[in-house]
Image (cartoon, rainbow, N blue to C red; front, side, top):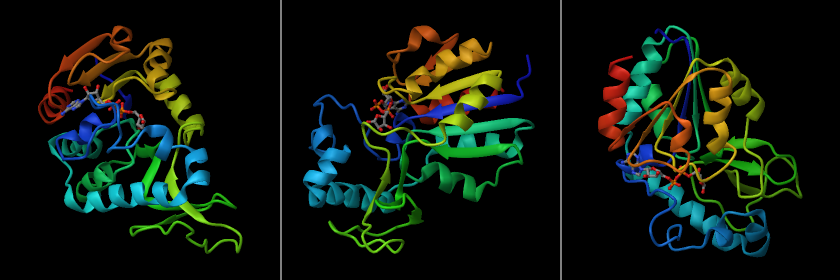
Length: 236
Ligand code: APR
């Protein structure tokens, strides 16, 4: 069967072999911090220096990493795909962006960072977003409003992911849904497979191990992303 409308969801597993840590490592900590201490609006209100520093470190790490063979395979797919291809990533790194910049995509392609982007900042007063490749100070002034401050452009726990209308519309119209490198622990992304199933799409999981939602997929391949992602899309 040939597919035309493809939605791909990626999670931190696709960037693991580039050297970006995944979230749910065995110790239950996120780079040494409890999630509620760094990735919530309450944490930012309580201790902006800790939260800004945590994301400053993660932002600096991006300079040390490169897209891997899995990001590159998706960029090559996007360059030759003769239909709609929505790539939704939960990752806040810029590794997909860099892969697609060096292999420009065909017209039907779009990339959405549903959990935000490390290299952008957001005004606390207006919600406006701007490119921000450097560090953010604890009390970083906003250029948009005198009383505003800049915070990381990251969707924290308790906040709603970005562009959900567009994502749900694409899932309702897709005929193939592929989930790559995500544990299925965080909604709403963990529910995308069920929306794709409702649409009658073929659903495939590519991951190191079965995810929490593996039973919802029609098909799966297990192994490192740099091996299984290029192999799967080469046959499509
Ligand atoms: N290749 C493929 N899959 C891998 C690899 C690899 N080399 N390494 C790890 N994985 C898999 C793991 O087996 C796991 O199922 O990637 C998955 C990573 O899961 P999580 O650490 O839970 O990350 P993710 O699913 O992206 O988390 C979702 O949670 O905290 C939030 O907002 C954060 O976007 C994040 C969201």
